Length: 439
Image (cartoon, rainbow, N blue to C red; front, side):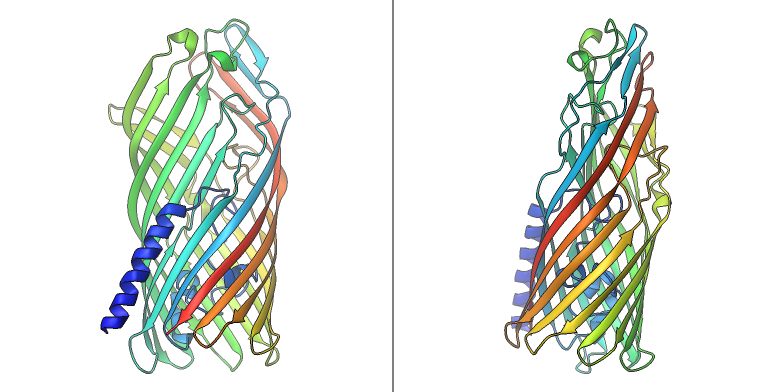
């Protein structure tokens, strides 16, 4: 036990350090800002079969009940490199005050996303010799977002820079009362850190608001909150696995501040106010199937429901009283994935998959901070058994984000009105690598 405790302590410290340093600040690559890149093996099938397969320790994220399917203790560490790209075209964005209405300019913001990395790590350990009781730990980043258009772009009054990062630590347990049924659950201790910035149009500029006289709003906060997840894994007949998993909603109350810089021709005074920001993240339910066709071929499928209606607004409350609310009206969504695994030989396992992922945004309330559309995933991957102890996983994905329109009319301050009218579309390229050590 001394050796095990030493290994576990080193793994836990290294994983938390790595996750803290490289937690994603990129365009999330499921609908809105939910991040599906939680396992390189699951990525290779576009998450098809993710709650049923239980092929490695990353099952802790997708369905902790699957730990009882593992052949022995495992440590798994993975990383994903994302290259998001988005294009925005102006369709007639304007800003008004009592002195006129003007175009917000010609700067389309370019690609607001940078190349980013997403890490995750998992540890699974059998407590009983018959493998019926397992303990596990998952470290992941299930939600994230970052974009920066620049302070003079056409949609600056809606957003300039948006960031959300989460770190989720999930101690988990699984138990198999029979050889055809396993149950599992985990506690999700989640840290969230968010920042939203936007320009403020001047009500005093002659002819109408312009970037040179804009004010600025900078809102930031963080919170530590807990949720849970639970799942079951069924094996009704040989060669068939059915997994059902539920991840609870988490409602963060971010404690932070808002810094408001008045427009230049309104004095330019800076006000720093303490306050709270509400961030209601969705619950997620998934049903997956893994069906053996031959000794080498396995077909996979998953259907997920995501309760995005939790994220209907972003309320802000100031410590001195008052506040504001950003209406979003997100809608519940579904995603559908199909895939396959093929055992090429004793060393190589091949994967492929496709997923259609609905956007929760709608034309009336879609924002430039989350310029989302329906997504199609095209995925491929492989595993290579180096030896009895080590396995390497590889994955590559192309995500196409459908073209959508953003048409928002807002009143940022008394005497001003802004219409952000643009179209947006994009894509994401993903390369992933993971290493699993079995002990």
